[in-house]
Length: 488
Image (tube, rainbow, N blue to C red):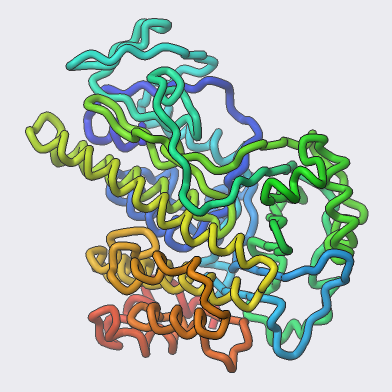
């Protein structure tokens, strides 16, 4: 955000409470995240950021900047006390590819390296940067925001300091609930020595849409889930998010012993971590979800990452925040110092909150279905269908077809999101979801013959061209531009 404002000719100062490099989570990119980052890098001339948008270009440009290969989303369902075992129907797993080969794959960001890289790039292009700045006060005037502790006055302030961050505390902003979303807790750290699932499960690797470990791996069980994200350096990010009742029973607040207790309940995951060693102390998060009651004022705005947070499930944090960066950048470029700026800022706040609520509605329904994995799979298709449609639309330079996250402003999707928790049986829910996503399903999702393994298949996108208002020739040229066939 600071780099973009600087490129627009603004006088910008970037304030940091701590110092980089430092530990952080929020590490997994998605195709839509990378596309938004690519659009921003090209529009605002950020060549130092552009290579981060694909695994292949990242490895070529920054071989020493740690990241992980993310070919897709891997989900395995577990019953407490039972070893995971695959079955021919594959109704206990879901594999959704996000790229056809490594060269254009997504990535996991080792944040200590990547955040430090962003800061160095900002300083390189001329952004003024101050770290170890501990602020507690902000004074809102009619024409500026004053930060008296460091004697800085700004005509506009963007808060990127995360949930319950600086402006939320300084202005005493209210906190609102996320309707129908469970109270959840988290426990996480980085490990070394984590084993690979492919060595523990009896899968025919020749048939897999991608190597199951080269992905965002989700171990799902009734009441929660574990994430496993592998980095090239040998570090693995892993943690658990769970509803309060389970987290309290396992005593998450105790740290490492709670992790060990959880693994004892999940024999296959326990085997994956049999020789793993924590690389740092566990972090306990007593409350994961957050929603600010106010998102913008006359002279300030919270980035989506500071306005709210739902859950790491489905890696929604990056795209939501990058959509916010894109919108604030456009407002500043087109409406700063105009009579329209206030109205645009109000629209930004409404969009940010609407997308947070839509995300919470879907993920809350997924939590409620973690004990019924076929239902969980059907609900997941809402995310994958809308995300893949949005990516294709933007790559075809038709962003108006997908102006909102999860396409939640489309009537069919909005109605389906509103109806997720109404107690329909699993078969009817699947039928309803497949009907709702049909106008947007350009990835062959829901085909029973694929038995929950979904590759990235050019034929799916070609067949879906009319849904995008495109012809097969346009889609073919899109695939060529994106390097789809580079390794075929």
